[in-house]
Length: 287
Image 1 (tube, rainbow, N blue to C red):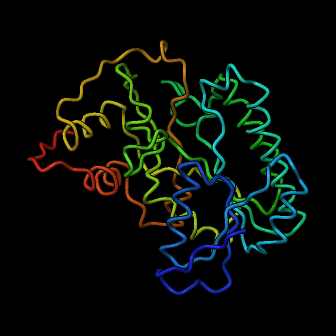
Image 2 (image 1 turned 30 degrees about the vertical axis):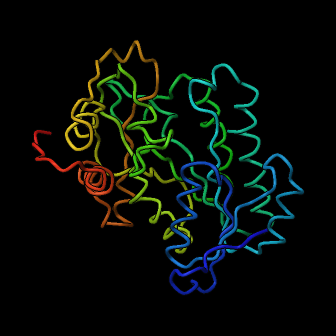
């Protein structure tokens, strides 16, 4: 198993060695880059999460200080048509890794999702379980995994990050001609993933709504994309009833109290996503 994090980066962070699952996902890939930049020794797990013994072998080989579960499950739409695989990915594999880490006395950072909740005018903040099969399995996994005292559960909102070519980026990877215009909690990965590493260093546990404070509507995000990146981009809206997906506002008060430097969502997405991708033209601020 190949260890990384030395290279020409900063000196190695003493006492830290991360074992990361989810190498090919957007979060797992970005975690590796952050570790390299911070001089943290890390390795990507080679074991299959449904194979307990292979996870034990990974831990024996790496001798990690922390384990990160950043595996990318099927998306919401696929979850409705691949229910068995969704159960395996969202529930069984996540539980096996949590159990192995508990057995070995290792902290586990588990990147979960905000797509377990849905709000309306009567329930403005994460009160109502979203009805998709994908969301039900994520909620089921969280309900069980939260009983493990070694786990830090991070509920990631709609992911925004500076790599606009990535298919998991909400801005471009999920860009349709028609979108629902409703406020949502979002997570700027360029800002918050380094925060998750700091959370591991502080050995924080429990459930955290891992989103930037505040909300943005889909229209606001796409207006910024148009004004900063592609002036020819257009879209149309349709109703939330037609969409039938999870929309929610999480409560990031706990996260903001621990890390007061976290930017509100609008400021963060401009700083970390749109400014780095800005075309050379005058920006009209009308958001």
